[in-house]
Image (cartoon, rainbow, N blue to C red; front, top):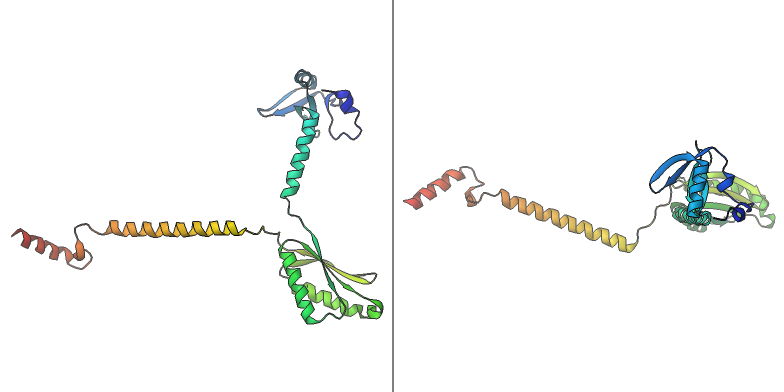
Length: 239
């Protein structure tokens, strides 16, 4: 434990050691938690050659850990990195139009915008007015409003068409969070499992049917009056 060096760090995020000036703290570790005087917790940290780190200052009493401060910071950084990796990364995809975009080009870009939104990305569509085409700004606004309407099922408008310089922007956000696409290997495995389950079910039904068929009934077991016919045959055999 080197408190002087660590406390000298002006960018320190957590209070440690003598910086913790409350009367008592709650110590958490692998075995649970316990409340003790701060001085006692400091003594335990010194004996172990580590630090007393305050991790939740607003709790009553404040929550601390007895751990090497450098190791604690590494764990926090690693945890933050893992959480960031788990988050769905949202990108902003751009779709560009001209004020007089033809229908074929419009449908092509509409298809791509739909794919972007279904993947969980945002879409920034804009009309670029070159030179005197700024005279068609109302036409550009109508085009963007049509675009938003055609994407109503998968996107919601975050910003209505707005002219900024020579560009008129429309912002759309996905309505549903992106769903991770299944890999081909996973889909094949699920298909095999479903087929195996169905085959097992059919075999079980077959076994059940064979079990329910009377052992001594033969062809007469499932017809009306079959038992009497069977009895007569048995009697004739005995004679």
